[in-house]
Length: 257
Ligand SMILES: Nc1nc2c(ncn2[C@@H]2O[C@H](COP(=O)(O)OP(=O)(O)OP(=O)(O)O)[C@@H](O)[C@H]2O)c(=O)[nH]1
Ligand SMILES: [Mg+2]
Image (cartoon, rainbow, N blue to C red):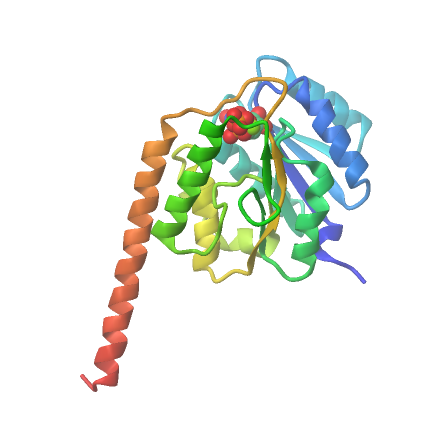
């Protein structure tokens, strides 16, 4: 019997990940030698990550590379990767960081749930059994606190809407208007999950162990926190407003007015 995960693409966005790239791709290939292909989306990394990716792709038909002209942000890299994956006919498209935070050995946990019917599977740090390794407590508090706020503001019932380890069924990505996605820092992950909630998608979270990067530099910028939370608050208020409108409309109908 065939499963959607038989044709899976894992998108790995890179900016200056030359040391990490062979490690992460090697782990993906070992963990999933048959059903998974890799797409590296490199933004013209000054350290030569793009050239290294080309060499790896020339030696292995499961590896592909998409070059972009310059550092255009993670959201743009994923959107380009999604378009590439849809055009190439993949049934499942995944997001994975290059820095080893998302263990390829746990990818099967996500793919199993897609095969069982999920449209979106989130590798979650904050469901029972999920973990973060080597994070300073300040980072944990920021991430966990941000997720608590997001879950209060949106009421989506998800524990880790900012997570970047995900598997999407192609039909769900096809429903998104990729041109319209928010590009405010890392909020696009929340944006995508929120669009999935509003599309009534089957969304599941599986516990993962998230390990802080060992090699290379983080591109995370602290300024995103305030802006992101503001955007999420607006989404939550707009949602509550439309819920209230719907309630009033149905009450009026019931009362025959
Ligand atoms: N193509 C592309 N990749 C990017 C860009 N910014 C970050 N990345 C990649 O996106 C992934 C996540 O970036 P990180 O810097 O690790 O950000 P993070 O995981 O949120 O932050 P840390 O937890 O501090 O590592 C890594 O694979 C980066 O190389 C970008 O502008 N373009
Ligand atoms: Mg990282």
